[in-house]
Image (tube, rainbow, N blue to C red; front, side, top):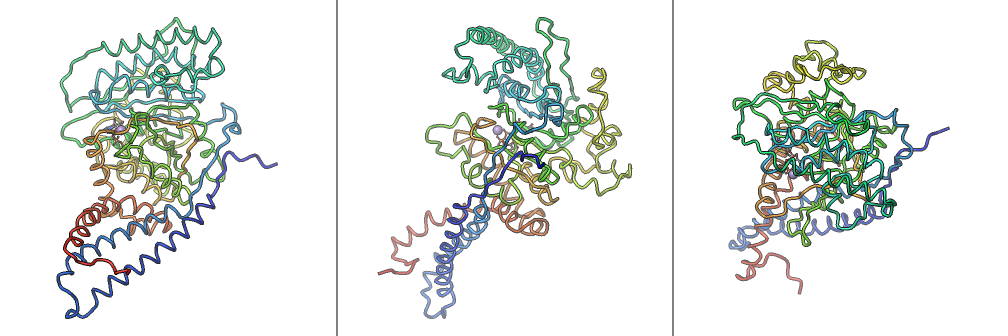
Length: 552
Ligand SMILES: O=c1ccn([C@@H]2O[C@H](COP(=O)(O)OP(=O)(O)O[C@H]3O[C@H](CO)[C@@H](O)[C@H](O)[C@H]3O)[C@@H](O)[C@H]2O)c(=O)[nH]1
Ligand SMILES: [Mn+2]
């Protein structure tokens, strides 16, 4: 008997028809416009009015750029799909694969410790067997505040996790749970006095936890020179709570030296990738920014509905959830929600090879990040050239590997993880190029996704009605400009370097997928037509210069 599918995919047929008809109409109109322009440029120079030349050239260049971007954009509209999942059909808990969660934080002054800890707690409270969940916090600022926060979060989690499990709380980020205006998360338990009592008790614990974080002051001057610090939160801290099954929680602050490039978030993720390999080595990894908490505990099971689907799993690299935000203003004048990306475009790519990595909220298969190592054979020297000199790490590439760091009691030493988190480890290896998250671009998420596509990996976009992750968007002009400059310059750079989707990409993946990727890299070119159309037609109108054919 055939087992029931874990997920289904629907092509949005009505949209497909409308989109394709629109493509036909729009491209016909473009063809006429181009014909009109070319007739002007190819007419004999004596009949052409010379004062028209400059404005016509500028407008024509703008039209060419806009049409180019428009053509690329059509790839997103070619085959939009949507998906549904059936987590109730997943195998029993003991058969589920393990998951590592990576949470990155970088700057304790800009990213409040309490908020980061809320993200950590929400991830620890995911609805997944706790012994199969391992949470790693990467602190790129090496801040004692964060380390202290993680220790306190661990203690609080021993109350918080059982509370969430007992009452089936949906919103497992404590800050969001306690600040919800209505008690709409109380569900069926709302009227039960046991629940209300429990809630009151846990609220007091949370207040104490908050206070503990707020009052901790360890003044330290900002430094870029410190050794790695790795600490595994231990089981033995509290004895007044019953035996609670807890996920593993590890604090990692990699070594930093001014003489060594640290490669920002990609560098931090690669350190976590190595450190976790010799500790829990889970086959799947959830990556979270510290400003994006789990708003619903079911995402891990949803993601497994794809990763465990035998029809797609062999080539599936990651399951991407949309980025949704909790701090969007009423008018959202900068479109901080990134609406077109997370509705239209990722659905469109999902019908092709799948969306690109969006930085946070994705469950990725660990081996997909190891490049083509399988093809390199099992020659130890070659593997070391590729992955660096840690024997333990190379052993972890074998999927049956289990580390005695987790099963045994070797937490205190952690020699190998420290070695893997050192500045020198990556020198002379392929980390950041062919292995792990890419260092080539400041938008490491885009490029890593692109390279996965080039290696034949696909992805899936999963958008349940309740947002699985909620983050803080940039809402003021200054932040929007800083973020925008980083994103768009980073993306554009990938359109003109050796990873150009229209040359390198086209040789390695289907046309439509590379057009989508090309759109992402080239749409910053919009600025040129934007400036031209904001000035030239108006000036031409005032000076009586015709730009378009007369209709009447
Ligand atoms: O040296 C660094 C710099 C940043 N981060 C972390 O990376 C995450 C994202 O950084 P942020 O400054 O918040 O950038 P955003 O522009 O908000 O992030 C978006 O854009 C990035 C690519 O530019 C992606 O990596 C992110 O996932 C995506 O949310 C945060 O958790 C940071 O703590 C580090 O760990 N180390
Ligand atoms: Mn952010």
